[in-house]
Each structure stands twice: as C-alpha cells, then as structure tokens.
Amino acid sequence: MAKGKEAKGTQVTLQTARKAIRMMPNGQHRLTLSNMGITIFPKCLLKLTNVDELDLSRNLIEKLPESIGNFSSLRRLDLHSNKLESVPESIGKLVGLTHLNLSNNCLTSAGLPSTLGSLASLKSFNLGLNQLDALPPTLKGLESLQELGLFDNFFTMVPEFVTDLRNLTKVNMKQNWPSHCQDDGEGMMKKISESKEEVFLVRESNLCETCLKRCKEQEERFTEGEGSDKMENKRIRTYSGLMVPNSVARVHQDVWRIRPY
Figure 1 (spheres, helix red, strand yellow):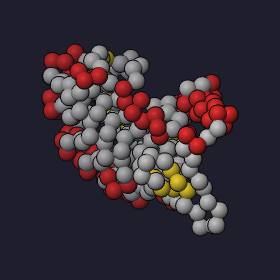
Figure 2 (cartoon, one colour):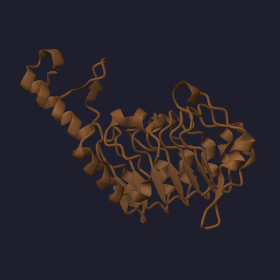
Figure 3 (cartoon, rainbow, N blue to C red):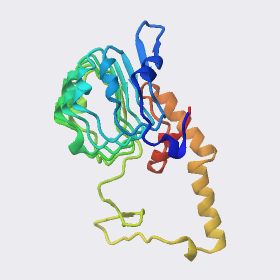
Figure 4 (cartoon, rainbow, N blue to C red):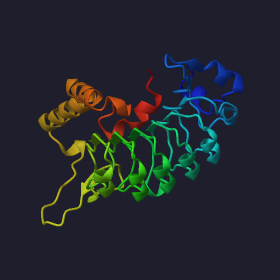
C-alpha cells in the first residue's frame, strides 16, 4: 500500500474499485478502500451504487459529493479518520443506513445537516473526535438508534433529544473539551475560568530535570504506554459497535488516518 508522498492524491479507477468489492457472509457486498491516501471522493464509485457497505476510512477526503445520496442500497458507511468539515444534505437519502461512522474528522456543528434526522434505520452513529458542541435537533427522528459516539468533542452536556430516543442504550461522551477552554495560539489549551484561580503554562526549558522527567513519564503512559493500551481496550469492549478508531486523545487524529491495520 502506498505511503508518504506516493499516497497523496491516490487515484482510484473503476477497475480497482470493483476488485475491492467482497461478498460478506451475510450476502452483502462490501467495498473497502481504506488507508489508500485518497484525497477526493472517487467519482467512479457512483457506478457502484448497489454496494451494501462502503469503507473509505483513514484517507484524506475533505469533501463528500451531493451524489452520496445515490447509494440507495447502502447499509454501512465508514468515513472515520478523514478530513471532512461538513456532510452534504443528500446523506439524508440513505434511509436504509444502519451504521454511520464519521469519527476522527474536522466536523463542526454547522457542518451537520438537519437531514441526518431522516436516517430512521440508523442503529450506530459515531461522531467522536470532531469539533462539535451541538447536534441538529432533527436527530430526535433517529428512532432506531442504539449507540451514539460523541467522545472527544466540545459538548458540555448531553443533547436534550437523546432522552427521547427509546432504543438508545449507549452514549459515549468521554473526554469532551469544555467550552471554557481555548487554544492559546501555540497549540496549548488554556482554561478560561470565572474564578480568580489561574492556570499557568510552563515551557520544557523552564522545568528542572526531575520535573521534566516526571512530565515525560506521564505523557508516555497516556500516549504509548500500558495506561493508553488499557484505556483503548476498555473503550473497545464497552463501545465495540461504534467502530471507534481506538484513539484516547485529540492529538492522535492524524496518526489514525495513516496507521495500517
């Protein structure tokens, strides 16, 4: 599989796409084009709208075409770990969709269309690892929804309509960044508090050797060490149906776009 510079702008031909279609044990057809360095939604896929499952995860796609609504047979759509900032309104035409994974993208609340509420057959909806602080109220129409992933976003509370979803059994809201946190302009998060208490940001160069070592040890435990693995495994067991990209922090977003299976 292509990597690095060769992976950027990978062109997918109709022949390549057809070869990537597999028959699943349940008789459905799955088209997998994951982790191929695709930057633009392949137009040739519009000739394969009879597939039941489409996996375009771990690519670099920034925009979906309005024609995405032509995949009338689609039951599962996996777009996790791309660079999507919005979703077209035509996605509401995929009324047979049961699983939708939009996690680990760049989605904002303004980029979510109200037509998502038309996906009445949807059972699993993953919106984790994005930039959301609110959801369209029309999502109360997702009567079949069982699992909802909202982890690693900017929510300060559970959306009100969630209590109206009678079949909902799992809601993952772990690690949401409160609205009173802001980027200081240099990649650091600074807490804006109404109280007089302040938080000071310290550079590595200002730390003594002992403190610097302690900070690095803590960072390794959360990003590379055993603590991270345990937390990841725990999420998989608890929210397996959400197809979570196993990330425990926002800083892992780009890693999961290129990490191989």
